[in-house]
Image (cartoon, rainbow over all chains, first blue to last red; front, side):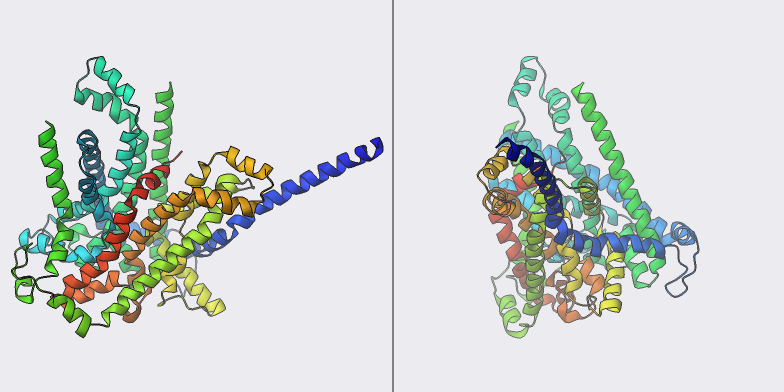
Length: 289
Length: 271
């Protein structure tokens, strides 16, 4: 008896090890379908594209260093687009976050019928081409700003209209899940409503604000759909965006420039996102202390 | 204070809903009223002419609607099918490189289409040259990258991660293998996440524009999200009826399913 037991021990260990290995392989098995597609359509070509960005042209495959990158950076169209995009994101994203925070506060306070909330959120589901009729009439016939120097105002308004819904959903969930006793305690301490917003509610919703910010940035790229539908590939200079620049570079078949531009675009976004996460982590650490 | 806030929120709700109401009400106007320069909300005379004209004389526009249906349905089904397995592995299984691969998935989510358009295009080109697979100028050029976008995996993973390990362990002790566990515990638990994904993916793909404009040159396979613009310029007299019909499924799905977004968008939060 004892003999057989001692024999089993190492065998069991072996089996356990083998099972662990199988478990590891199983993980790969589960992600495989997704990973293959993700690699084929995103990762591999993304890496291959780096090569293109250093070539002279599609036909002349000689290494030209960073000259494609320099070309892009010194191009007037690119600079114009970058300037417009930054302005749009700075004003648009800030306004969208502020408006949705205030709206969420009001809705949280007065708890209106759910149809009212639904009406404000519904625009996120409406295709851009559907409302092009309305917006074209509003911004060219009624207030003719789409072809003026103030075209950016129209774009920002459309962006706010279309993206406040997402932010509102996130903020409302944060507010309703907030511990009410903290607010009550602040009330007893004699704080007024504004003080409570500033010192209690706003800090408590910071994690949601981070998420709202990311969603707003992603949505800010999608406003291009509306601008493209309204104004086509070559809109008024004031609303010529990076996406226009890249679409048009693509159509002119200068892939080398385009890849260079897209890597810079990607790098800027990653750096920005990284910085934001870093600040968020530091902030939440500070809160814990 | 409260009555003022109440009025304020009602006014804001009306402003937000206005472009939608305008589109629907204009679809019941006759050609004469459509041509005015003012924004008119109420039809002078309720007319169904736009819809009749659309159905009788412009029946071919229905094909563009079908293109949109086809494209959106395949992408959503594909995303779920491929996504749930990957999401489960990222959330509950351990394997080397898991966190690094997941980081790549997250990074690709925040990139705008114009950045991934070049990689997509390079790959379509390669697939055609090496394997003679035609993607460009077919709906496949939109569908395949659409299925493998990483957002769905990310969303589902966040949900699966929140399923307590105790439940999973308990069913393992009962002798459930990975497959049974997956179908009897995980899938039922993430139903709200799947609905969220359906809604968000629908919203995005029903309004697909950039991909179609860049990768598709044959007009007859364009989705209605793009072709609607052609209707605007070619057949303005029926534009609002086509727009209303195109908006209808979006509103239907959204009003039925928006409650899932409350939960769905919020586990999306980075934890």
